[in-house]
Figure 1 (cartoon, helix red, strand yellow):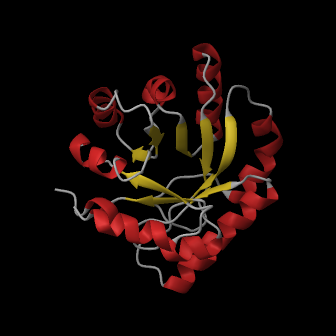
Figure 2 (cartoon, one colour; figure 1 turned 90 degrees about the horizontal axis):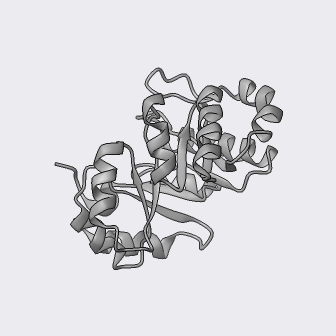
Length: 211
């Protein structure tokens, strides 16, 4: 673990860009170290692992938990109950379910819609044309607050290719008047900042390698 990396990045990025420390695969003790340095937003992608950390760290009230993993329908209620932010809503059907569950649970999660901007079979997300066609219906859903779009670039792209896809995501978010773009990870965060990201999802760059 290299906390000085966290400070280096924090000092490099504009003030309107937030770091989401991706803590999946790391222990609650490591989260505490980063939190003591002023980091309050943490991203998890497996519900059970995240829930155990939430229980252990329950006394640190400043922590805000973000769900960034693939959403399974049978876990949606638990995710709505335990996460303020959900970055990875990848279908209209799941968004509808989250809306209904949020109404029942009297919650208002902050939602980012995952968009698929390249032909990558390993990634999920809304097709751009489909999202545009559904936008009116999406805006009418209750008990959710849409704040932005999220995207994951395929591995192995050049810096230029990464920048191009991130700019597509930013342009789409702007067309919907959404303030946030959750884009950029440990390998491509600089291109994401250049393209207008507001949330960088950084794991290994902050915490070191997962074991």
